[in-house]
Length: 391
Image 1 (tube, one colour):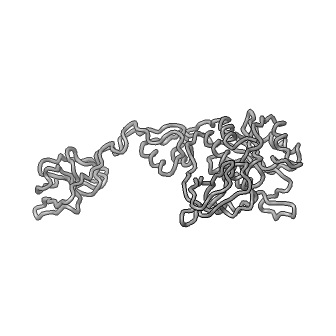
Image 2 (cartoon, rainbow, N blue to C red):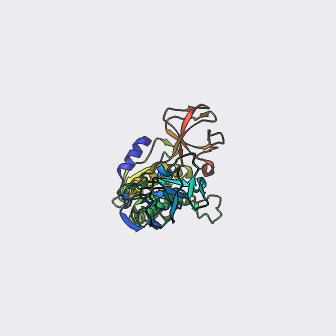
Image 3 (cartoon, rainbow, N blue to C red):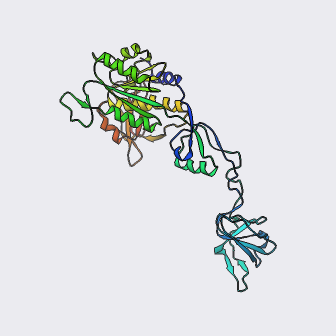
């Protein structure tokens, strides 16, 4: 049995990067950039008025000024602005050459002869200078970034309409056990609905992968072997839930080895998730996750998702915030690293969820994150600061 840190390092050392593909920028939301994106223009591309007002030379602002033209956004100024002259400009319009201030319309008065007079208390230039946001050639989005809706606007503004992204990893999912039935069925006395597969499908999608459900493998070694052989050649990453403990029907590790998988570890000093198994095949990397849904969920977040990030070059990291404990907390055994689901109350304090064990999946629905108790640590005091990792 290895430590969680050793397991984490072992998993990431087996990273197999996905390929890249070029797609329209309009389809790139939530994809991982495989290139740096540079601007092909200055932004703003010209000296731009930040307000509706009158563009002039600052040394003339106490004088009466002649309006030589009106410049709308999207139009090019036709007139030069000379001594004691100004141009009326709209927000976003080009500021005529030589003008170094735009006086707001609210601070201007039109005289009877059509001349303009200003009454100014605060001399703000009200001009966005060319290139003050971005210069031509500046990197505006970095390789490894998950493209967000606001990044789509950036891509559009720099004319980057074809984007090189990493391909989504194909993640196969196999559930094991004769006791499992489809969620649409009412389970018999000895049965349970299969929740792991659908939880993992959602986790895979959130992590940027494509889930492929290979169904339920019965408690039959030959049938499990055939299903694993089929799945391992059709995906980049294979997740198998259940069948990795020490029961009479928990033969997944042996079947994996028979299918050509090299097992790198099969027990981790962590709670929940001790029987987590990890191995490599020429076609894919494989996780044997515990059958209990809380264990499965947490080990996906702690081990599988980091590997998926590394496969796609993603620089995403979970948000971690430091907050005080709302209550005292004690655990019975300190021989393993504990991953404890918690919620954050209205006073921004951390409360361990009402958690009855790794089959208690409904406990996760109210959890905001996970806190960690290291090996040898058995308690936390009210008010003690802990790091909450988002889930």
